Length: 211
Ligand code: 0O2
Image 1 (tube, rainbow, N blue to C red):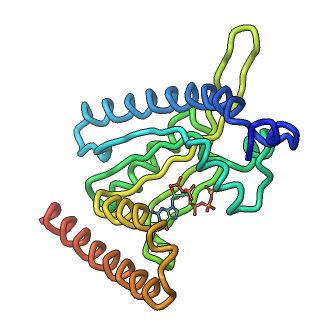
Image 2 (image 1 turned 180 degrees about the horizontal axis):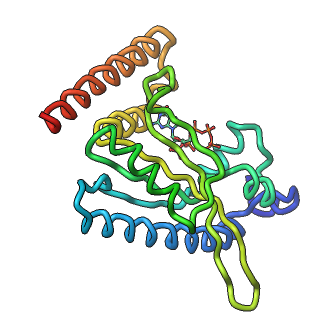
Image 3 (image 1 turned 90 degrees about the horizontal axis):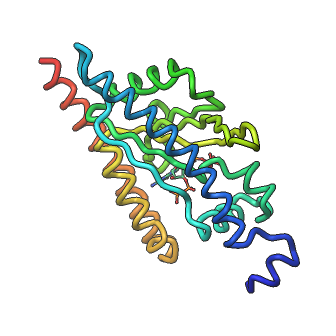
């Protein structure tokens, strides 16, 4: 669709999205700075540090448009602000599965983060085997002369084995979407088996750590 057609329909233009994304980036950077403080504080404490790696990203314009379409939301500025909660996303990776819950506990204690909702796909994996802990948090940013604004951020927490699974599954998702039904089912089954095998490896790793 042409940019002129988009503005006629009040659809979100790439230019408007870029302006919006800058504000989300401020909120994301603030949250990342807080996570770095948590990590460094855990590093100094006596126990093991559950934070292994963390990274952030701003969702691309095309992905926001695709997600609005997939979820049946209008692709307008107001709708995107209300419905797309992962414009700013942070992924935290842990070494062990049980570290995920230590990270969740620490995030809950942090006063700058208001937890909006959370989904535990670690205890309740998706039927395809996807397993991660998701939280939506809200971060407050003060803009001199404008006042405070609140921004949602999605935080995904998973261990390294789960991250390996999700990265492969994500990269093959679009490729597999056009496969014949029978072949797709076979691949989905292989992904479920891979997730089960990785869960067993994770359990062994925890046993090794605790032995
Ligand atoms: P992308 O391209 O990774 O950004 P919500 O985001 O909460 O409004 P939903 O569907 O209720 O939407 O949330 P859900 O299922 O918790 O998934 C949100 C995000 O988790 C996805 O964002 C993915 O990043 C990741 N995710 C969820 N399910 C899967 C899965 O089966 N495989 C992989 N690899 N990742 C998954 P997006 O925007 O869908 O995708």
